[in-house]
Image 1 (cartoon, rainbow, N blue to C red):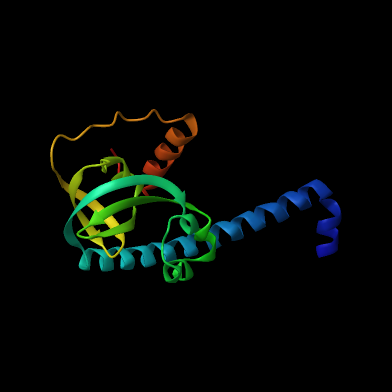
Image 2: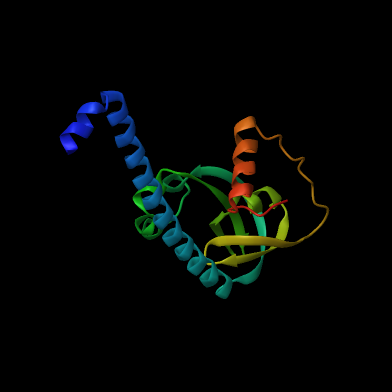
Amino acid sequence: MQYLLLAKLSTGWIVTIVVLVILIIAMIVLYFVGKKMEKKQAEQQALMEQNKQTVSMLIIDKKKVKLKDAGFPQSVLDQAPKMSRNMKVYVVKAKVGPQILSLLCDDKVFDTVPVKKEVKAVISGMYILGVKGLHGKSVATPPQKKGFFKRTMDKLQEKAGSKPVK
């Protein structure tokens, strides 16, 4: 009976059905992996909120570099996943007290950090969570125009619920 059904279907239909089944299985796997990663991110965010502290620092430099070229100690690089070692991250070099430190930050925070100014920043470990107070006048950077791909991705993420609606 099954052989008769397959004999009646053309090769194109069989390939289409196989591709659709593979796509459906991939979507299901991505859904569950996404849920797992979302839970892990929520746990990490709670831990960072628990350990945050406000520090006064002088921002020396800020740039986007690869994690392995950012000047972090070898122990930090060993703890990072292998895939993220070659990714570019936002790094801020700041003077905190007598020490000069390299700190990581989010792209939203990176845009608000002024260079060569003293700021009060909220940090958790070596990660800048936010910039609270600025000494002196802050130079507002004009918002950059988004490209077609970035605008489309933002719209899709808002519709999917992974980004807050503006």
